[in-house]
Length: 323
Image (cartoon, rainbow, N blue to C red; front, side):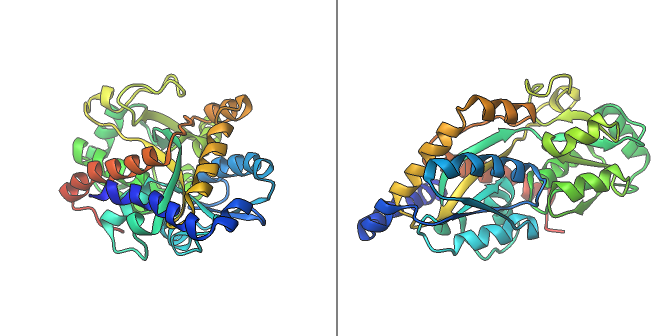
């Protein structure tokens, strides 16, 4: 069972600890690399740097952020999956490369065997935003406009196999609209393409959209939670806008190479959970639409497994492939 294998990846760390007690006891003795699956300025990057800034003094070593957004986050994920399991390489991944991409393509890593979960960081809806020049202000108007212009509109995504991509494919299936997919490496270029009218719409989390919405260059018309999201008041859900049953979350989490000693995983989990209780971190993330989660490695493993199971039939039903 996939979940059992994911949880077993955590247990592998305990065996590694028995073989490397001194290494774990003295950890960390040098800087830690924190690999981002998205580019600088993205929501992943904003979250990752907030964690790194708080984690470094707690561990007594620098936590160095490296952005590697290529191929929808799968390049960064593969790098960490094959890194030494010594606690000096971490990944801030998201549902795309961890739960969705393995359903879409052959990858140079196996999430079950090559990675060990540490903690769920955030969970929040995607926001469906349209370029300001598009004459629509609601889901009903968007569907009507798209049906009147089949195949003439396009949507940006933050990468192949991302929740940004899958959310629109599910919405296309439920609404019957025909819009063309244009994938980008991360939210900054996807958002800019929509601002400039190169694409007309996208699903993305709120942080990279916020400034453009306030500037009047993008218009937020719906969120992907079943009900309106408390941190994003005034934006209706797709489900309540005529498509009951539509529900999807964008989530992120920290992973390390499988075989990392359990003592190190537990230390990272403890420190990040504590960071998520700091009032300034909570306020900063909530302001940007992030709902901090935390929890255990096993809970993160279950989330990855549950999401893969939930979206597998959707991917199959729409015949989704990597563009």
